[in-house]
Length: 626
Image (cartoon, rainbow, N blue to C red; front, side, top):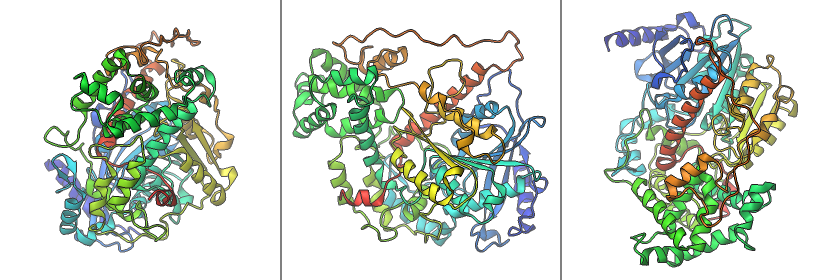
């Protein structure tokens, strides 16, 4: 568009201002009106906030800033301005990745948080360097027949960019953010907060490591913690399998206590649920069991395979509603009566009709996603053996590891073996002194993690908490583990009380952001929402579970021959409504946030199928398995 071209020209001229001195102020940045992607999901009749965007020139290499156009890139930032009467500061939202951009609806997903904060924060969203409307590294030759082709992607990236890729690092990304924070702080009393989710927590830690960050930040939240030194791209397989086994042993095995946990264990008679799971997979490996019965009866042709069950359970375990089905699927595969056969055949048919394993039916890459950016960060910073602590894994190592697992993405583009071919060919950048280390900071820090997070598992978040206790101090940080929550608790920890507009994770985030300036989270949080998080529904007694069960199995009963107990009465009143048409009701805001969460889930589902995202594991753990 001609108007935008003029804007970009003006932005380029602003580079004559000193970068190193950070002398640029907000009034000198070129902000122009823009719209929220996806319409913003702002519940009417909520007042529409002012939304502005800028595309600012930045040095390709922060250690070598220059005004030479060949050594500069553009970084896109969008902001939603606070109500001037309520404004208390700025909130920088750092989303996950690497390889993703805000063009995938990130802003519209989280606009309800803006209202939950009483429109008191300017909310900032950045397309990281290398993706989206910032200088985009793209995807040339990165897909072949609908599947990622890391080898061809590496060859194309080397030809297209060569050593310029070395400017697209986590540290340079963090420096972009710090530059913008300094430029947009409007007054000395401004409160500046950072909320990182998934890989955004990795970026937030790097931001805290930079000189001068402590002086401008008042608080940081890490949700779904990508642990420095343990956030490795190759171990989503092991994490998903470990979380599935935890689900079967702790929550379905009776150890969690409560009626649902004990009920689930009792369905397996005197057998341990995990032992039954093991027997089901052994039968599949041998080509027998229920899969053979389904094949002989003509209900599942070709024969249902171990790889298919692994992939299907992987998809279930990462989704809040569907993970309730994991024990029931194992139970039906083991019992395999006529009702089970019909239900399983329905599930298999549905899975095969929607599973993407490449070919012309594969969905297009979401807008703004860049495999070049993803591989550049992963191969350079999130890979085993970068520091010689373990041998760099081979395709054979990955294959041997996968043969030991029950639940992982065995089919389709997320199979970790697809990452191996490109590693040796990639023009990797050298890691710096920040890589693998934790910030030593005085900034108050809140860590949130779900105990059923397959992408950033809770054991790594607990390790992060211990490291931050050493570097920041016990009085300046707090970790909250949210039961039943999946990856990124801000949208994956819904509560039972319908009068509450936000889930538990979002509730804690809002509390922290509205607490007095610089107050540590161990002094400001009410954790009562932890007891109100919607629990697992293994019995399938809620309307939501029965609806999803009917879609998945062709019956509203998860277990079929075992009648579920009646649904208990809700202890909560109906949410209050307002008779004033100009009032923004909490229920309206909640609808906006739930809608955003659904979009987030849809995008996350694409990533579950199409890329390795935000995984965390200790390198020695992988080595022990190879």
